[in-house]
Length: 241
Image 1 (cartoon, one colour):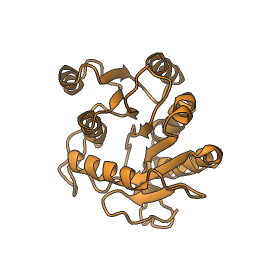
Image 2: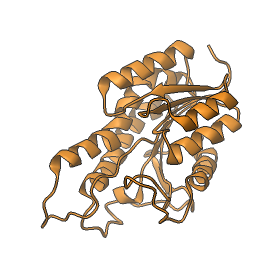
Image 3: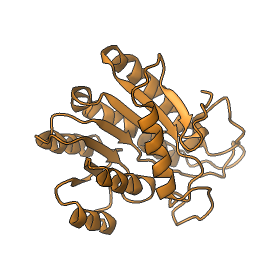
Image 4: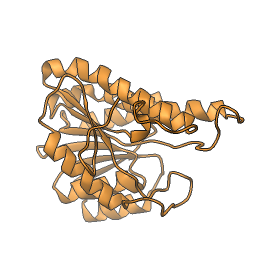
């Protein structure tokens, strides 16, 4: 059983998840990095650099079996997690409005991965989480805020992030009785691969976003409230539900 601080991060193939993995390895954490790309070259390079700290897991948060297998591997290595960061998400179509043809199979896939995936992984790892730091960080989005919504499209992603927020609240209501917390972070406008190819549109690089996320976690990790804290990672401004 490891005695160092431990974290599980999903969605580590690239972008924010990969940047967070590197950042937490540098901070001395043992990192269980879960992604769907086999033999990921970036993670393989990090394994060479951090052979004792980094455990790379094949993890599809949209699959019950994959999540169970990942959780079993983690529990074979440690009985506690100081932190779970649910970062895995897919974007889906951002153009179709209710007047257009909507791919509902894709909407359900986005929902399964982007919303249910975080709940699925939290459920599988709740034992080590509550035996450790009792903290779950869900990477949400301003796109999940009903109070802020001005969009006419993004059905899968917006609905999934709103559902993620509700799922986070349900988990928080249970674990806060034992001192647990769920923190919801919007990473800001990030340059990303989520559109299927690299998009340079955005305010922050993934590395900058990862720094903002970690700084916000450090600032808020011990704060206990009735509901999860839902904030912008870069500004610290709270978002309306």
